Each structure stands twice: as structure tokens, then as C-alpha cells.
Image (cartoon, rainbow, N blue to C red; front, side, top):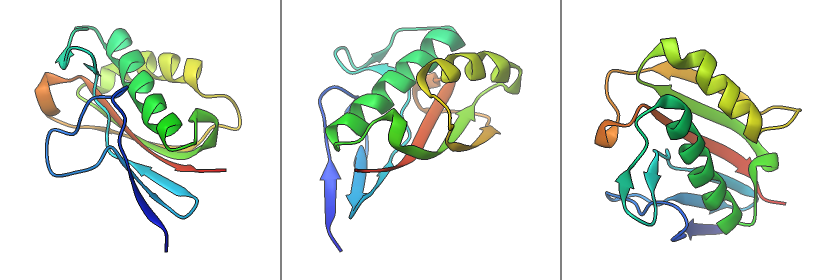
Length: 127
């Protein structure tokens, strides 16, 4: 088994004992990305649209650092603070992913780190 830890400065640094992603053979498992601007270390956006876009930009940066990309994602898990934001998150999400879409779960949770409104993790293949 070939295991590699993925780290990029183009996505927020891990704030605990975990990696941004782990690549095992041709599979990549990302940690959840929240809407932190990697340049400032802060969540700057306060609305669900801008936060979702930042999350997906961060996720894309991690995927690219591993030699993968959004087109290679096979599964995502979306955590949202308010299920009423589901349609908005879907709209932004659809701007980033093309058909065939990855499999996905979406779960409403009571709280996310740093007061984020959305977090997304992914499993991808690395061509």
C-alpha cells in the first residue's frame, strides 16, 4: 500500500491532528473543508453562497495538490448548518461539478468549526 499525506498552502491548514488529505494508491480521501480563506486564516463570507464557493475552492486546491481534481471526485459528504440552505448549496455545487455527478450525502448538523455554515469532504480517484 502506497500512502501519502497531502498538504497545500492553497487551502486552509489543518487546525488539529489531521491531514488535508490522504492518498492511498489511486484513491484520495479529503478532510472536510470549511470556508476559511487560506491567505488570511479567517472565514470572511457570512452568507451560504459565498461560503459554499470558498469551501469548493478549498476542496479543489487539495485535490489539485494530490494530482486529482473535481472531475475525479466519486463521493462527497456535505454538512450544512441549516437544511433550508440545501437548494442554495445545490446551486453553487452544480457550478463546480459536471455530469456524471459524484455520489453525495447531505446532513444537517447543529454546529461546524469556526461558525461555518457548510463543510464538504470528498473521496476521489487519482488518475
